[in-house]
Image (cartoon, rainbow, N blue to C red; front, top):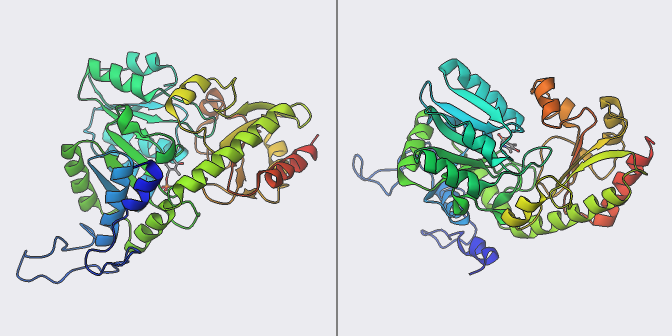
Length: 385
Ligand SMILES: *Cc1c(COP(=O)(O)O)cnc(C)c1O
């Protein structure tokens, strides 16, 4: 079966009633026949039938041993970080999601240190490995400058040095439609399902998919001990969203490809300085993108010749179709200024080093008609010239 078919077929219908739409098992507990004798469910923090359908679905989509659903992407990330012991280290991509950066910083007080480095050069990841390295944490493409790391090469070379190093890939920006990190050698895949997977900007949801049974059991233990589970209703919303994932990501990627080419052609006329989109032939990591990804995705970032937050503010408040908001991956096109919004918590010098200029603008391209979107963004840019 092809991927599109597999997604739909892997949403199992309800074994009890045959309901084709997954029922929302809105319950906290389950009646037992005698103490400890039950149908596999005893308390919803531990297990819930609606959540289980989602976990089975995402596991199949990402070629894992099993999936675990969390109350948000960051709850999922936090649980994975709890695999570490004090004095163990993480090597992470420098252009990391702001919330992940914050969580990693929080773990400093428990003696867990993260080295943030540019993993687009695989060598950087490899030469920074020490005896203490437990995780290599990749995000690819990154947010917002869409840097791409070579998952296959980094996995292969790091495991040669120490086979116990775990490769974690935050696959939020690609979605399973664009790449499947476990197939490329990763051990753990994370999704903020809040974004593409749910796809309608109506839920917070986080998913972890693991390759290995031992790590699955460890993570399941961590989740059950700390409680960041996805509710039955939010599990249902995530399943519902995933059903159209392929259609959406395909259309969004095609839209973004056209918009990036338009912006590139009219660059000077529109006052644009740099454009970051992996589909552009001159993007720093275009070659890896071609090799590793099925599509180039629907996030485009660009900076302005007049490089100030004030100029960016003018643009992001002048679009009508692109709504000014954080987040990404939904059906509706969004626009934001990372340095004053999503990436505010990253210190200025680190921000600049990873290319997040003051005027940087990030587009999350939706499923609208591409000509309407092009007209909208160009009228906003022309206003500041
Ligand atoms: C949004 C996001 C997260 C955090 O997910 P939440 O669901 O908002 O908690 C993590 N990683 C990436 C790449 C994200 O875009």
